[in-house]
Image (cartoon, helix red, strand yellow):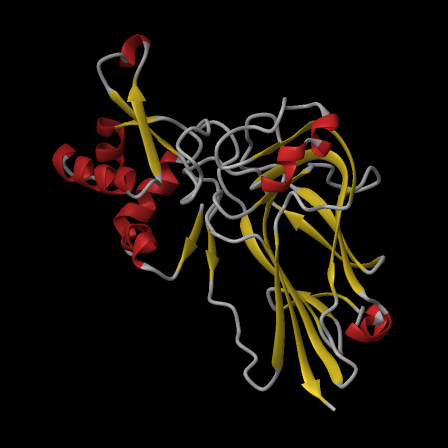
Length: 303
């Protein structure tokens, strides 16, 4: 589950701000528990337990179903969430000037992918899933969701820097998950990110998430399929390359040779020799939790 600092995430924060509800979550763990079991363990009444459970169901932390066998007349409760990520507002670099480009997922200039793979617009799947040839379908330019088990997609955008502009920071933001048939909330994948043919970082995305529906994911998209990713901010400055404030490599903006390139080249790859070979899913405007495509920001100073 991904949370942000807004009112939509407040029900989850309210649930977690209670020792009683935290103990209930720990007791449920990986099991399915009845209201009676939880109440007995917590030494509270069934009625109070039910209120706690209902609040956590409403927040999306818990799910429930009718039991089977000897529990067929009982409501059985289980965890819907494996982990929680909190997305903080991105930093603003007010002392710099800015060139910004929004890049649609389907505007890649090169690719090599293996199934499971596919593309989807906000209206429908492009062609057929698991057939790489549809990555060249004319509708792919409208893709708002892209996934593959291994391979890469590569993009090019104009380098908008002028001769009198000195690049200080390159920031690339994108919503990303791993790839698993249907979905798997714990399915790590090592994603290699290249800028101008330089490997700037290998980021391990922890899963392919479907514990809750994506905020912008279209209603026609199946609940069991990947719903959202994590919004990441890759920043390359004069000292190093980091993701969300954590250093990932010693690559600097000087290494990208932006002053020599008419384009900025960007590649996302799920490589065969990765330790965690879990594929890649990218979310664009109209899918996931963040209503944006890939955003490339170049911060600069004038000479």
